[in-house]
Length: 206
Image (cartoon, rainbow, N blue to C red; front, side):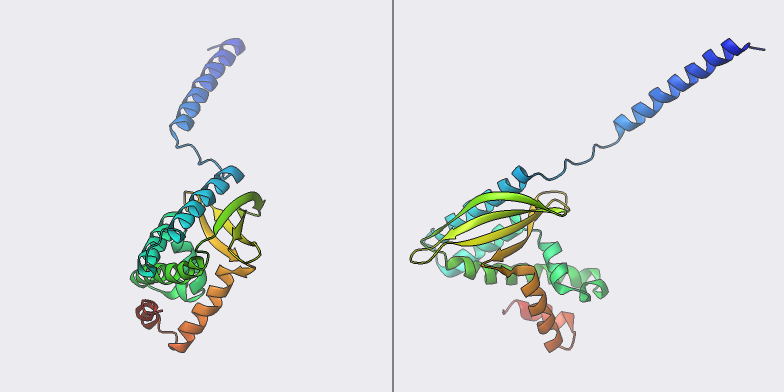
């Protein structure tokens, strides 16, 4: 029978071996994603704004510009999160197929609507100036400069909850996209008696 010292050595070896095993298991686990930073949020908006400036000063037709704006939203915006947030409680009762169809229709709708808003900046430019943490996301502040008008702020809310940095809200001259579109979408759905399929079909014409 081992004495106390031998028993302590055995336990120490077992503890050491167990520690190595645990360390190896932890090393094999995927590392957590790095948290979003102000620089990363600002970089995303810099790229977005750069593309917007290119689109509005491209000289293309409105139809061509709106197609470019849809590509821009698909690349830099968290469209699924925006679409669900705007739809509100109706999103919870929607089927997977309905939610997918609605998200696709909403992407076209929101791109056309805000694409036309950004087209008003033709001949001007947007410049990014600062970023700050707000709760679980970052707010990036930019300024729009338009010929013959006073500069005004365009604020971008950026998150990485989707797995990568994307913007999920825009505030133009104090008008909050998420809040205003939630009200608008609720009214559109009410006008159709709560029929989501009708709303999906009609979004293509709005």
